[in-house]
Image 1 (cartoon, rainbow, N blue to C red):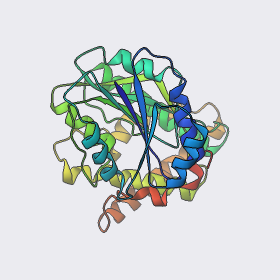
Image 2: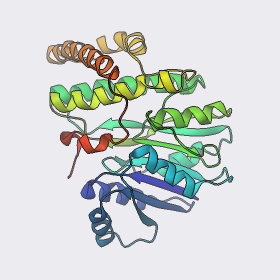
Image 3: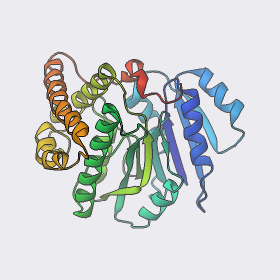
Image 4: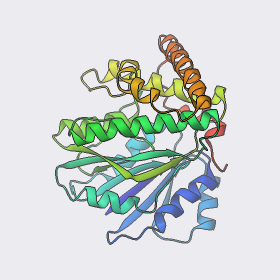
Length: 300
């Protein structure tokens, strides 16, 4: 059985698209979709528009995403390692081949976790669309390298999956897409990157939203040093410079994109400065979705 877990936060139209994208996929294996959202009206909207018994709705108690994830682990945990748990969000949607790619990857019994490829839906012909394209192309490059070398890699919270029976809970105050794969890795399983399993994301299209999203992400990852100090870091300022500087310099296609690249360098230095400053007083907030950026919501 494949359980597809979609965590959302009052994004009924986007979540509907996320669910429908999975329901139309054709695989031999049985699967069920579980949507978890703290808003009852989302349940009403989904059940009005979807008449398929493969979808189930669970009301999120609103205690933060780690709490919701642990509720689901308690419900779905099984020692059957042929069962697969797929994690994604209500504000994204996946390519039509995603489930088949996941099924194929887990045919290798040494694979315990997979991650898909984030792809921005923003056009490249504006600054924030270009920033999205460059960022996700860089992530794609690094994950391919680590996956091919069979090294540890942090997954994308937009789309990742694990074998059941390997993880019973996640931790608070750290991103689940980092710590859950690490738990799998420590048990001797491989983490595999699936570049053909694409997950489509609306990237922020203005500076305040971009800063808000990036700062939250950086603070969450820096918190790993305190809570899981022995975990290999693949997302950090040092790694960003080491792995991304040369790649980014070869990425622009024209003078306009080169100018946007320079602006991105300055912007990223700013968000790291702000993140480290704020991290002294504030930790990662598991209830971050209440303050999520509006421009990254594609339909709602």
